[in-house]
Length: 242
Image (cartoon, rainbow, N blue to C red; front, side):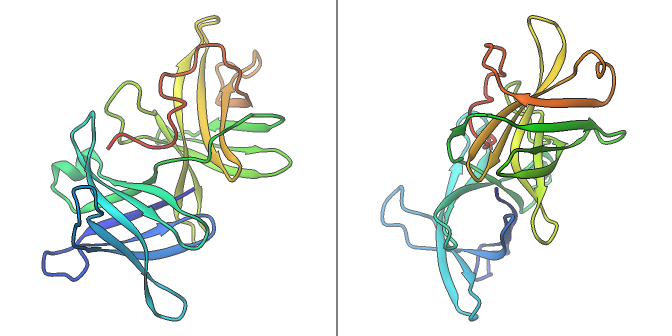
């Protein structure tokens, strides 16, 4: 569960990029500083931060990359803040690329593996504006309130239609999953397929409407059952094609 922003600095700055990275447990300011490359696959940057004692420390490495399908540049980072290593990408929206902006958004790259839905409860409600949803999902181990925000990065049919967001301790939105609009080939009814990252791994669920709910704004979240109707990339983790 990670989110953040990254900004390209002027060429004369000591750090080529500065930004913030957030989770439900921390909000950390980071810098990307160029490093000497020993080989083609050596990191392009050191990721640094300032610890509680005020000392600058190296917390990871980063690479300049190019999307295989889109051809768009992005930055891949591996970071460890003392909780174990994790991977994130820094990508740009279409608007940022068109404006040649130095603004990037940090999104999660890999997950903890797929967990079974088990016994869960949840609900999803369409909001009146902005093509968004609000909802919750809970079991005996976790209780998450979240929002579905339209995915501005979608450029291919298989990309998610929505990003699933929760809030950091400071209220910063954190992407914890993806959602796809889908239609049942058996009933013809519309539903949403959700992939949510929890501390125990990725959780796949569907948001469907029963007879009483159909045509309204409320969906019930139910455990995922593999019927062959799952959107093509719904099992591909939380990453977006840059």
